[in-house]
Structure formats: structure tokens, C-alpha cells
Image (cartoon, rainbow, N blue to C red):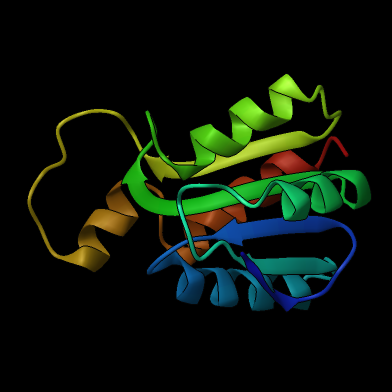
Length: 132
């Protein structure tokens, strides 16, 4: 089962693997901007924690998944499919690596290139949450 690290009410982030640390940085940055953030360590890519996803989808206006995996077949896609199947009316963002050949490089360099660094993630969340 997943583990709630920070309890909030506006934006929910479910991070897996190495992205949990990034999620903590993102949550702090968004909190400093006045956003009320829930951060969850998804812990397992499969099976997904449907109870936690239901709870977050019913109590937040935006749900975000963060992973250091390719989009297709990844954790975020599993969550997206579940939300769609259950017809949950929540805005959803899947932060992951595009489904393409990934260049070689250092972790920090690749995170920046693919938008997985804290600054890029915060920018995307702020842009997407403007319409909420």
C-alpha cells in the first residue's frame, strides 16, 4: 500500500521510486507559493493502491503522478486508466519520461531535459492549475 507523507487538500502528488525525494522538494516549493499539497509515496508501481487513488480523486482538484519511467505502461498510465475506467472527474497530470529512446547522460541533466526536475515540475503544475 501507498504511504501518505504530507496531508493537504488542493493538489495531490503520488510519486514512486527516486521521484519521492523530488516530490518532497516540489511539495515544499508549491507550499511556499500557497498551494495546499498532499504527497503520497506510491511505493509499488503494480498493483496500484486503488483506495488511495479514490480518496485523493474525491478530495482534490488535481492529481499528479511522478515517476522516472517511460510513460507507456508506467505507473502514471495505470493510474490514468483507472481514473478513466471509474470516470473520476479530476484533472490529471502524468509526469514521466516520454516514450522514446532516452539519451545517455547524468541524472540531473536528463531530469532537466525531460522535465523531471523540481523547477520544471512546479512550472508545469502552476500552468495546469491556473484553470482550476
